[in-house]
Image 1: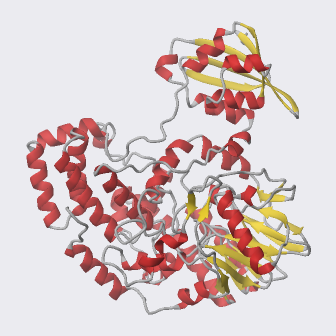
Image 2: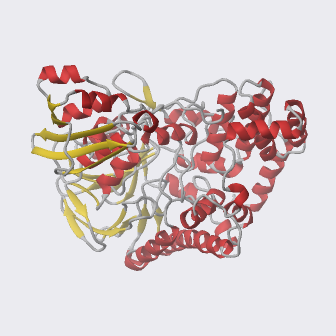
Image 3: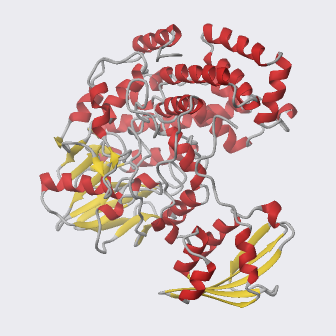
Length: 626
């Protein structure tokens, strides 16, 4: 296409959605505005070097106008709700900074200061949010921090709000999961997150229109302060700065380590990310462990029984609050039914022999959930959630032997193109499908041709056209971002990977075992296959020393605490910080030896040989092309 256009099929689907959904219900609009105190003017948040890491004003001109045809009407409605930014009063003594990152930061006033809950992704946005709060509520010191769960948008900005030692609370297992998720597969997750959140797309009608959970992610500095107190059980009560908190631990729900809490003296319930105003992911498109909707539904039932009937307001780590007991019970009950329904119906159908892809086309939510705005698929979707449930129980294989050993995309692409009759035949079929409005088939057909011949400009252009139509029609913000980012890359643009969560703070919190795990997943197996290397390690820091062993054989790097019966080739004594610098490429063996931070007894070449078989991850790998 020479200019941005939209097909009649997409326009007709939008009109049908307008007729089908309760757009006249203004409850959410009223709740979004309720308690508003003020916003940043201008809204841009900058890093120390002057670059903009967050710009809520970027969407304002588009969202202030009438809905453009290039945006799904339901997603448009959600974008207008989540884009509103500023400081809001939730109830007496409880405030939220919303719309200043993907997530919310909650501030709970205590006797001497304020308790900060979930300090956003970046230090820059968290600091800006705290400044905004203090503009309206005074220079109250931060007296404690709470992380509700182990995702980076709920802890990354902590050093923007805290520069002294204060209590830091988190659910049990928080540190292990926060570090492992962002380091082990962090490069691949960050790459796909660039597509998921539309980081390279310009805000606007033909570009980025939010991610459903928030508008997008900030691109500032990610930090981490380790928790000083673990919340280990439901019903655990803690008093912070004179405020009573009653916790509910919810492992395996939206995050592997997560918790809700109730403020009994303020009748306020925080549901973390377990109940928001969207259908959430059971498997996020950026990649993660598959979540457990059965456990998720169970913990929502438990929260209703424990807290909801005593609550006057419910708030969460994303979106806007819900006020009044009956509305809170309704929200949590419908959210509970939402996850239970997807879990149970997927299992019912897979036990009748249907595959994940088939169930995803069959399953529709019941009318009571279909009409609930908070159950719409802006961030998760029934389609990819159903496939996640299938994967959780059945794995990647659908049981059909034809799918047991398929060709990889490039080889399959060449074979498909040849079988169809060559590139021109593929293009004719794809153009016919495009004219018929079957954009999914266009994307699949041209995808084979692009993988068979990545330089085929017509195939790339036609697939980009199809991706755009699918994106313009998508109710799900992350689907829209994936489609439009894919189209941009096919046309020669660069998606980039603007944010990394494997920051120095996170890497510093790796246990020694996790640190050596991160070495194991970088070993280039074929290059290392003939090597047999044994190293014993003494790693020292201000807290003392730890002994560890590692052995490399048959391309596998194994390790453990203490000593190993098998003799080592060398013994390495190293400062922990020096080990981090060595493994990250920030320093060399020679420099560390010279500084006295590293010494080797035995055969010194062994460590050099190990380092030469470590692969560096690729933060910019291709996604829509080979």
